Length: 445
Image (cartoon, rainbow, N blue to C red; front, side, top):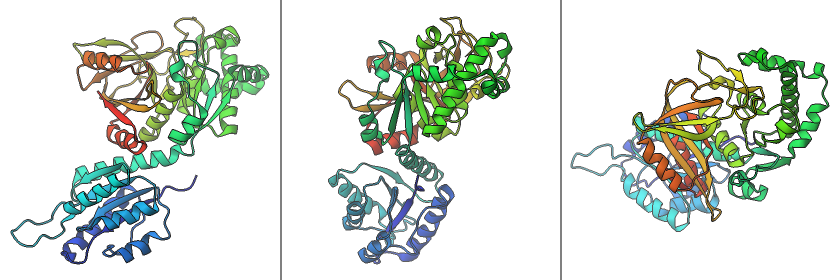
């Protein structure tokens, strides 16, 4: 994958107060380099169309930060839009001095001019207002640049569909052409039975390292029958080899009933181990759940919980998210560790069985697909509480920023899918920016 390229375009006119503009120029570069050390910047402010053209000529950016260093008419942004189709961040500077004298920059008027041209070109954009030294500006630019990087990385993402969704779970299905055209993602497909057959072909000696890997990450694996432990390791090797060979970054796997009826051992703990390895792995063959997880993992730098909303407590304003047992081991509470148990319905192990550790901030996220085929983002902020396991399987209790009953009622009425990614940290701004770059609706709760 080619390196992500952010380009800073400080456009303006030479008739304004260039000493003030020059100071903002230097501070802006310093801020941007603190966020992205590889940002491409000009040697000087671009105060004529000729200088703008000369700077842009050799470039092929993945993200443009267009700043009115002073007022600039719409010809400047139009030149950028004529050349590049990448996302644009429009940055307005605050007027540095208000003293009854000369208007130093007039950046804000330039922003209106640029925004009007962006709309005429039919181009969505992100917007930030403020001086480089403003903390809010730095945080917002960081989120926007993170969204641009996500979009860039997603275009080289290879996902895998392992088997089909069970009956009644069609919301998780994805077409390869749809993933590629909308998100830039390549989809590989393989039947679950193919990986099961590969797993069955391994000897006990071949899978011994995978037994030890799981043993090192979990608590209580010795309580699982030896055959199930070995068969789990067979599956883990089959999945790991497939992921490595095909350069898979995220996958959605069929789980029930095949792995119980045709193999005798669940795939839950295999998916758990893959999540800790940095491969977003969703169960019940939910492709858009897996993509939601992958985006969350890229933003947070750690595994993401995947589960169903199963319970709410209006007095605490909490929603409990639960699933059968595929959560990453690293998400487990420290007092219990990643405890191994059995699948809650089939009573066969190994499956993960623990409550998740707390976090002061969390983002509940889902890429949803509406009946008309368009996409939307579900976003909910909250806090992961210090709660023990709520039900057999894995669980996380999220205290919601809004009343939990209202969140549940509104999201059910909005007909969202029943699987959600729970991401540690507040990533609302970056995900909102990504939705805007993709031209998708954001449903905030």
